[in-house]
Image (tube, rainbow, N blue to C red; front, side, top):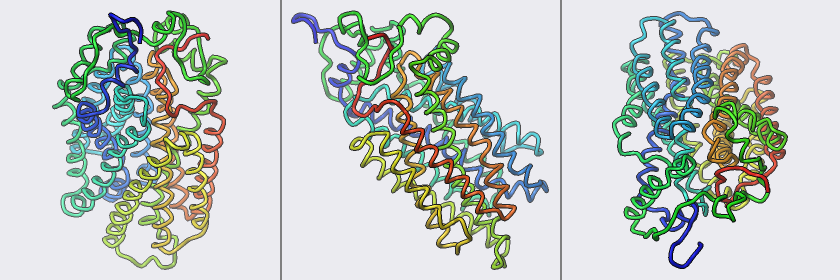
Length: 482
C-alpha cells in the first residue's frame, strides 16, 4: 500500500481484501456448469459410436471419425475463443462458446444421416474448444493463497459431468437411443446462456484495458457479497505500482519488453511472444504436455470402451450377447468415471504442497506403471481396476496442467496463449481415437498400451523441462524487462 490519505493497490491486493467467499462461490457454480457441459459432450463419444455404427452400418474408420471431427472443431475453437476472450472480454468468449455448443449439440440429435452428424458434431466441438475460457475467467477472481486447491475444486465439476453422463447414458441409451442422449446432453449449455447476463467480466482483464473504474465496481460488489470491505483507494496494474517501472512477476518467470505486447494485433503479437527466446522453452514444453495429456486421457477413456465392447472379440472368452456387452460398457465407463474423484483428492492434496510440476511428474510416472499389466490381456475386473487407477492419475494431471498453463502466461495474452496451447492438445484428441480404437479393434492391445506409456512418460519429461513453478505466486499482468 502507498500513501496515508489514499491507498494505491494492485488487483492481487484487492482480491486479498475481498477474500474468497459467496461471490466466488456463485462464480464457481456458474463456471462449474460450463465444465459439466464440456465433460458431458466429450463423454458422449464413449457411447454413441457403437449405436450409430449399428444403425447406419458404418465402418470402424467412419465410427472413429465421429470422435475425430469433434476434436478438429475443438482445435479451431480453442484458438478462436482465446483470441475473442483477450480482445473482447472473457464474457464474450463464454457467450460465443455457449451459443455454438448448445445449438450444434441439439441439432446433432436430429441428424438425418452420417454426413450431417459429422458437421454438427464438428461445430459442437468448435464450441467445446473454448471451454478453457471458464478456467481463465474463474482463475482471475481467485486470491493467490491456495489458488491451486480452489482451481481443483472448480475442475471437479468436469468429473461431475463425466459421472453424470455415464449414468445418463446407462439410463437413456437402452430405452430411448443415442438421439435423446445428445439432446439431454445439450441442456447444460442452454443453462449457461440463461444465466449469462448475471456474469461479471474479469476485473483483471478490465484493468489491462484501462477500465479501472469498472473493475473497481466489480470488486466492491464482490466485497459486499462476501461481507468484507474494499478500502477506498486507487486500483492500478502491478507494474505501475512498483515504481512505475517494472512488473511484479514471479522471480523465475520469463520477461519480455512491454512494448512487444502491443506492436501488432493481439493474436499475432501473442504468437511472436510465445516463440521468443525467453518463452520458447515454456511454450514447447506446454504444447507437448497438453498434446500428450489429452492423448493419454482420452486414450484411457476410449481404451475402456473398446476393451468392454469391440476389443473383447479378441479374447477366446467372447461369448456375450450384444446386450450384455453394452451393459458392460455402461458399467465399466461409469466405474472408471468415478476414478476421477480420488484423482481430484490426490491432486488437491499435493498441488499446493509439492507444487504444480512435481505433482504432475509423480502422477504421470505412477499412471505409466499401472498400465504395464495391460500389455497382455487381463480378466475384465483386473482391466477395469487398472484403467480406474490410470484414469484417476491422468485426469488429475490434466486438471493440474489446466491450472498451470493460465498461471504461466500474463493477463495481456493469457486467453490467446492458453487457447493456442489447448488447441495443440486437441490434436492429441483427434489422433487418439484413430490409434486407440484401431489398434484394439485389430487385437493389438499391447502396441496401444506401449504407445500410451511412451506418451505419458514424455509428458512427465515435458513438465520437468518447463522452466518455472507457479505455486503460491501472483498472476502476472504484463511481462517486462527487469
